[in-house]
Image (cartoon, rainbow, N blue to C red; front, side):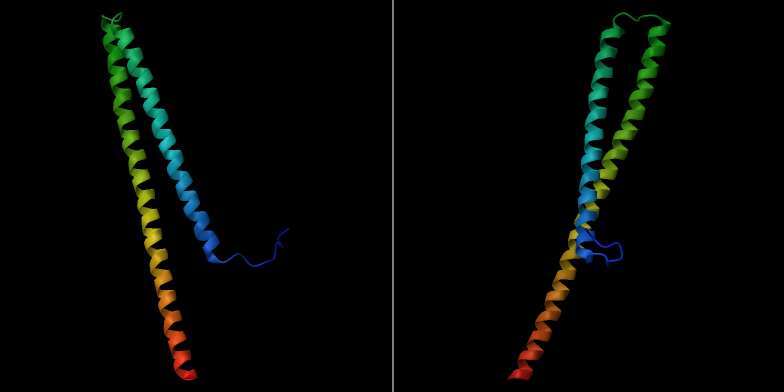
Length: 121
């Protein structure tokens, strides 16, 4: 069992956790998006079935209500897409940052190794 007073693990574990959390967030948003599309299809099916029977003013009001709902669904879907795009961009940027950090570390190691080798020659 870990000691409560022990220092935190190196940053790599935190970065992996953050990346994993971001990927989980993307999956959750995509699942919500799919669920909303399924609900939209159910509403469209119901609208098509009921539109045949609702011809009066109540049918017009029902149609207007469904149109308003559909407009709001479009906004929600666009917002979900935007969030997924931003999280994907975050993952790409994280990868670039991680890669440039690794490159800098490797360059510094090579330079220090060369200096040590020069001293030993």
